[in-house]
Length: 317
Image (cartoon, rainbow, N blue to C red; front, side):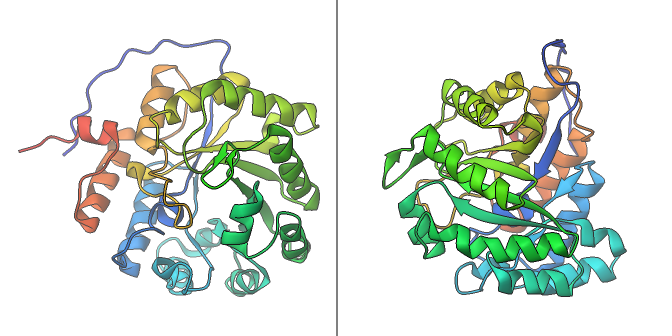
């Protein structure tokens, strides 16, 4: 039972009235878990998140099991969701595809939304994609082209936008160049990732301004923050003040990056919702239901949720 305490609301006329939370918990949140979560639990997690009012829930990734063993059951999971109570609506859940082989699997299941995962730095491109910074575009081009020809929507994650554990600070113009090339390939939205959580509010503002100056409007941009240095909410507020209306977040603060050991958990969806609610920004999310869902998943994983809001709203015996 979740005991939700009151919070004052101070609306800000300079902020968007409503934002979209792009929930990444079932994919980005669980992918780094060492103990394999059963398909049934993953499917239940997704159903609960949707029932809590989250408008977009990224379900899984069609990545090779050798790279992310946790997601080896992607096909079984999507089949379970499609054949279950979600029915055809399950095909609208976004899935990550690393290449054309992953796209083939998504097409076979009738998925309508895919995402690709690019890098803003040379070293991470080599380590994560086994491609150079420039070679990654040649890999993505046929995947995006085929997906768009099939009527799919394509999202592009851009990792290491604020800092790289091997290269250090990443030049803003380099991030913009990578993002714009992915957008020009056919991605309808870029998710700008602070993969290791080193970004700060001013950096967020400057990066978003640079993308705008390069011709990409706020509607084509989303943000994806990690809380390694406790800056995720501050960075989200900076993006909100800039006019960004799509925010990636992970229920209960689950996740990290399996290819970057210094990447700690994602921004917790509950913490983001709490802040937005206090600002009078609508998300459509039932916070109590979401907290209950994250508490349940924490039980499945055998540990407490790192989300501050989940901790505050979950009574302890």
